[in-house]
Length: 373
Image 1: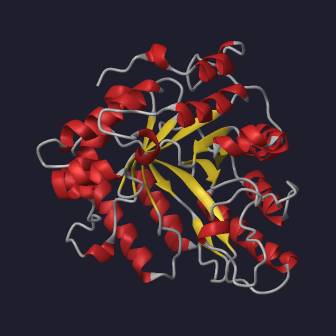
Image 2: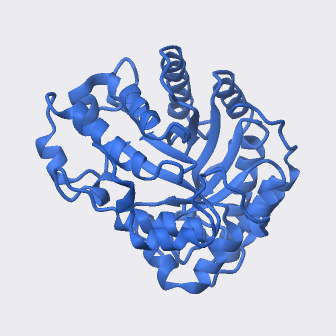
Image 3: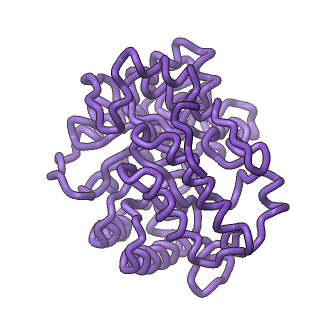
């Protein structure tokens, strides 16, 4: 589907034009303070996922994002169910606002996500067939990635494609796209994204890759490496692996030699690595807020120290920035009624122990030499 670049919303155009921000994702941005400034000095792009409504309605939170984040991710507004109200119809208003917010503050944009087994509109589930699937997939990706070509640094092209519990020999998740297109839907998606925006960094993103002492995660790493190697051999334009990084506060922080080896193995395939959805779930932690914050901070520190030891890791994104706005408030509410505290800033937008743990992990990193990853 051809993309009419002139149809970008007036909000997006006005947000970027005055500051000269539409020269592409590699545009120069001013020096930063906060976590993004510390991270940048050590070769890491730091950012957070956002909802545009919360940014537009909360000036204090918007100012915090501008200070702390050099990259912003659309938490929900670039998913199929938000963009596609009906067959042949697109609704870009929310996605445009995310891009406008980022460009206004001189931040990069990470697009999330072009293909996922969840967050699909009812009409797609109802109408998708083997006869129309490839055209729908490629048309959607071409329209969305093409609309923002030059404005988005990177995309989660395919999200959560691996699921060992589905018991397929290849380890792929049973999904609506797999059902109608087979395993080829993954390289097809990457090829479509690359055609639409040849300058964007294209990621395969997944969860459940973090812990060394969780057998199913160790197995998933092995499956993923085999699949990535095959896609790379076939020439699929996959540039990086996205490791989500949803950590669990009440279990041991078992991030060690096996995770380091996995990261090295990914890098050896010629792939970069981004941490795309980092947070720490404190739903089942006991004790005071200060005690929980201390354990959450320990998890951030332990995970990032291992992840950042691999030079291919070039970006870290938290799934939200402040406990004031976190999806875990509804998805992982605490039984004692106290608010969850998974992020670097509290509900009052004050830095928590997690902020200092992250800052230390960034500052301790040896600045990697530039690589093609």
